[in-house]
Length: 110
Image (cartoon, rainbow, N blue to C red; front, side, top):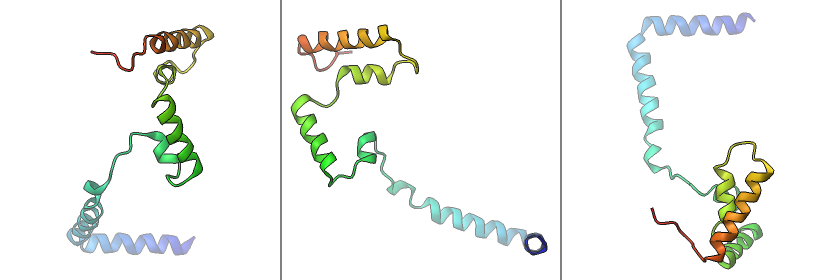
């Protein structure tokens, strides 16, 4: 691999001859790339990240949310449960979900 070794040799010599120039160019490139960071948006809805918004799946998801609400309580419970949920954990989650739905609670006041 003499070509790769020669390329790194030339790169090393260039950096050694003008270290401040290389550092300045690197900082300018980083600043140019970082300039777009404030324009990024954070998406907290994981489904919105993966489902195309003009698809049938998105329309079905929207219709489902309008009909049954945003998220079942058991889904929220399972999302925060340990990695290995037992059958008792799942039953407790379903019982909690049905209890909350029977009382028509949508949020718990803190």
